[in-house]
Image (cartoon, rainbow, N blue to C red; front, side, top):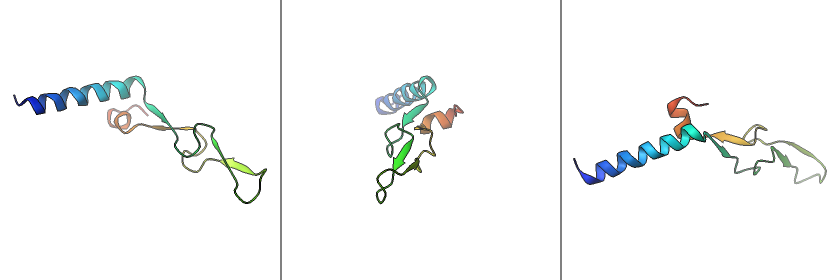
Length: 68
């Protein structure tokens, strides 16, 4: 077996194992605060549009193996 293919299979197995154990990643937009602030009005805030107020996303590999 080609060594590059073997390394790619091992890396994919490690990544999917990581996704099974830790299926979520933090939202880049709100930084897990679950809300965003208005730039026009100082005191106004609402649910983050990126993660819809959850504070996290399901990782791509976790969706692939059905962990959502």
